[in-house]
Image 1 (cartoon, rainbow, N blue to C red):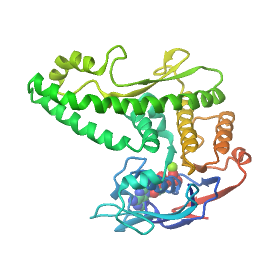
Image 2 (cartoon, protein in one colour):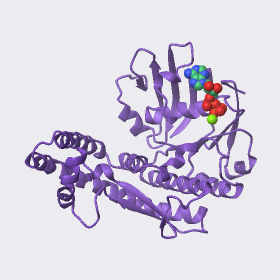
Image 3 (cartoon, rainbow, N blue to C red):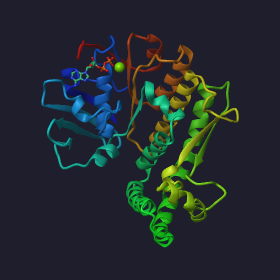
Image 4 (cartoon, rainbow, N blue to C red):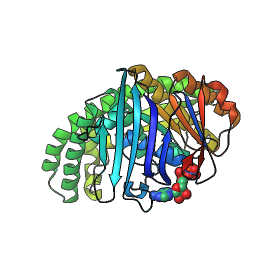
Amino acid sequence: MQIQKLTLHHFRNHQQTCLLPDPHLNYLYGENASGKSSVLEAIHLLGFGKSFTHVKLNDLIHHGSREFVVNAEVFDEERSLLMNVGFSKSKSQKSKIQINRDSTQKLSDLVQLFPIQTLHPTSSNLILSQSKLRRQLIDWGVFHVEHQFQSVWRRYARVLEQRNRALKYRLTAKIIASWDQQLIPLALKLSRFRAEYVELLRERFNTTIEYVMPENSVELDFYRGWHPEFDLPEALLKQLPQDFKQGYSSVGAHRADLMFKMNGLSVKGVLSRGQVKLITFAIKLAQLQLLTESTASKPILLIDDLNSELDEHKRSLLFSLIEQMGLQTFVTNISIDDSIFDCFPSYKLFHVKQGGLE
Ligand SMILES: Nc1ncnc2c1ncn2[C@@H]1O[C@H](COP(=O)(O)OP(=O)(O)O)[C@@H](O)[C@H]1O
Ligand SMILES: [Mg+2]
């Protein structure tokens, strides 16, 4: 995928901004609060339908305006097709998605069409926080290669909700067992999709992390969501007394996780901030690598606040990897860091000033 034109209308501090991006590197610089991240936020919205800073969509509407519109002309290399994608939200209505001016599209159509990866200062939470973000990372990857994944996941979530309700209201073990009968095959299917994906991801991750952090050995493992020594029916049965007490299901595919180890130890508590950031970059680049191998239309990479916590040497290693993948990349930074421009065959600089471009 390649954005050839991007327009922001009444979006955050941008009244009306239009960008004609470079196919390789787009470097947005400018003072704090000038509106750099807002441009990435707009692109992110087209790929995820939600904000990467987790604000409500209505808060993205320019103060005093009624509606924001983000629009992009996107070239799809896989199908040799120029598409128009749009996302708008007015205060009182639901968000609207348009693909080639057709407004009947669902969010999942947009997400499927427009793979985007974002790296921003809080992305490092991925490594250190609870499992949810890591599970979402796996699922984003699986979603883009396995078209059945989403429907299986939805069915699983519905059954899980019923099972949790039965636990909460202390219904009989027999009723729980009947939900388990439905839950187990779905969990195994999800788990198989994820395990296959993580296996492929691990190979790319190993190469990437060795390149950017040769001084340490970092391993990646998949946790299915229940103890490796038990099969799922056993694990569910074993946890049942505990689950009745807590009122929810403590094992299953909804507890899947990615485990990172450095030099044989769990990474939590042992990593510096720079190392956390490198591992975060490496895993996301590995995902992009995998995705570019499996589809002809390449994902787009967004990097917000480039300079935080990475030294120049590591930065240039990462950017040489990004260039090799040939991804269209958008970077924001306070100042111009010309050490990365050499990595790319072409680039464009955008000076962002108070919600506008120069
Ligand atoms: N809905 C909105 N309307 C107008 N201004 C906004 C809105 N939301 C955020 N802003 C302002 O937009 C400015 C730009 O934010 P941001 O894109 O994060 O800047 P940068 O990344 O350049 O530091 C900030 O000053 C912020 O307060
Ligand atoms: Mg910013």
